[in-house]
Image (cartoon, rainbow, N blue to C red; front, side):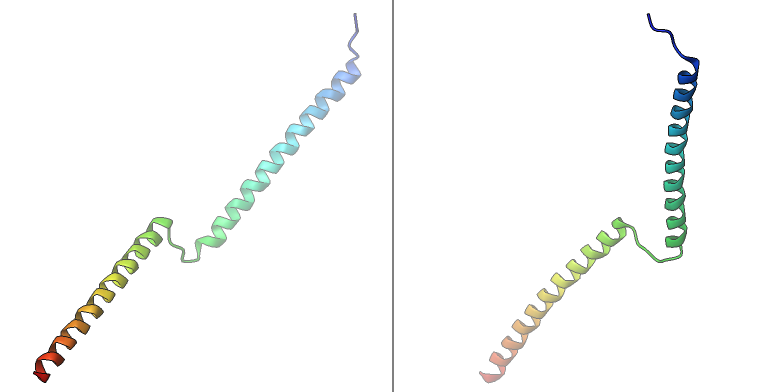
Length: 86
């Protein structure tokens, strides 16, 4: 049967506590850096992904409408030329 040395038990507790403290400090530093980035970015004008996608879809629709109108104008111009020649 092994006897437990109180000195080694205390050292193990101390090291375990130190490891927990270091891990907590790392989490706190990460959270603090994230918060500072949010504050720094807060003054800038960014849009959300949903807003960006909505505007992107609107631009694609406008481009399609523009192409359709160009084709319609070209057809009307061609019809007008054919009518004036005849």
